[in-house]
Length: 80
Length: 178
Image (cartoon, rainbow over all chains, first blue to last red; front, side, top):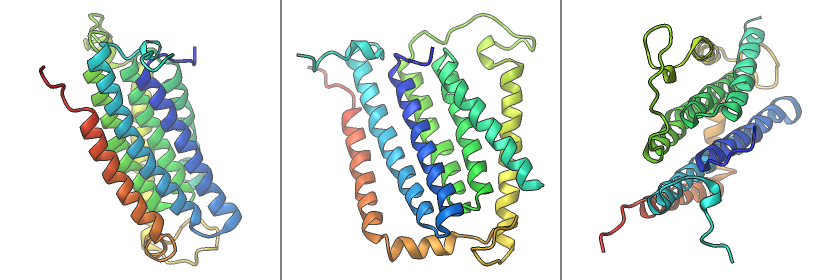
């Protein structure tokens, strides 16, 4: 039920994981270290996630232009 | 009291919308659930006193990444979204039901409370290390840290963003007609 075969759904899951990591950084920054390094780190995580989303969605659109689908099992051009 | 209410509503919104991202079949609905989840995380940032990160979260993720995702879904979706069923209000069934309207209301409440919390923090001036309900603004300190201690990472991230956007434009450009 959780496993998705849609490439965009996989990218959505990656966004969720990156957000979880950034939230952990900010929480530890508040309750453990008492400085702002966690905030800086989560800002860079947000930047990298934005770059990743842009490139990933460009790849998805290109893949759709070639294969006419965005099912992950169709991505077999680099196999063998 | 206010912070507890903000935390509970944000946490409920985050977890329920994250589960919605995973469980819902329609990929467009997954994107909208992701928007709710990211808004809840922005509320959690506001509870932690990270006002700059919360505003960046709302502007970059909710305003940028989710919209990009929605455009990608619409460009690659095909005919998956066409549905003729209607709900009680006479709208198509893909426009949502009472649960999605409730989640939308929760998104609005969390957004309002986040803004209230951030504006309250801007008007107060307290030392950083005291754990109270009002937080001082962290924007000045984050700005100093970004151009003093972390300036190399800052510049590298700017180059990374430039490269990523140029690469995305090159990858997604239309195919040449041979």
